[in-house]
Amino acid sequence: MRVAVTGVNGRLGRALIAALEDAPFTGPRGPIAWTREDFDLDAPSSVVALLDRDRPEAIVHAAAWTDVDGCARDPELAMQRNAEAVHVLAEAAAAAGVDLLLVSTNEVFDGTRPHDRGYRPEDAATPGNAYGRSKLAGEVAGFAAFRGRDSRFGVARTSWLYGPPGNDFPTKILAAADRAREAGEPLRVVGDEFASPTSAHDLAEGIVELLGEGAIGGIRHLVNGGVASRADWARELFRRTGTHVEVVDVPPSTWERPSTPPAWGVLEPTPMPSGEPLRPWQQALADYVPVLVRQRAAVAR
Image (cartoon, rainbow, N blue to C red):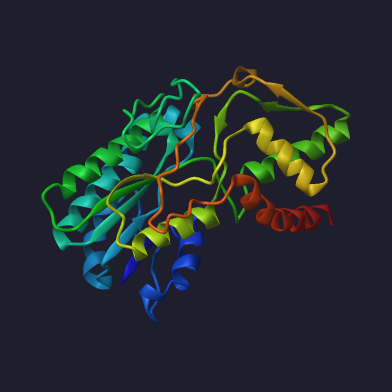
């Protein structure tokens, strides 16, 4: 299967290319890496030439404008990049008979439901911020473009994605812990915002499973197992890295932000074709710790 991936220089894009290179169904030529120069969210019409040049059978659209505060400051640009670009891509892919999987977010939900369970794919999406609205609009545009077509459109929603090349929550919170310890102060971390920390590696492996099993249609929630607050996530990370700092739970209102994330951003995982869910978030985080420790040591030198 010829699989193209957008946003290959991003966190998930890198993980997807690595996972697809190991997948037997991609063949000796491997996946097709579409960089920003190939497919720019600000100039998505280039996809027509890309489809003609590379002739993929499926596309994973991992590229997005994920700066949630930036989206809040410029919602029109968010719609252009996260919705209109998907519309153009979906129309071209559907016309060419190419399957398309869109990577989306838990922020299509406002986070106000009771905390008795996570959001399910069939739950009504009611975004509470500009980023979520733009991503939901992309989902809607994709389904509309593929309606009545033989090819398939699917959505893989995830939450709190992390992993190489860094600049993620684990990297930032470790740096914040170092600063707090040096200042002799406790570290303040949000304690009442919940989701499932999800490894980019694990999400990529899950997407590859969907592709290999021909199961990319519809909406799926792909997250590591379990639920955590930001403070829970930080404490587990500190425990595994041997970081000693006092953590104090605080509300999100402690810091003013242009965007408001969902307080309950928990997605109920969709069963995978194999029947095996993505592993618990604590196990996935443990595999990332050696990378973080090496990065931290390099910065300290």
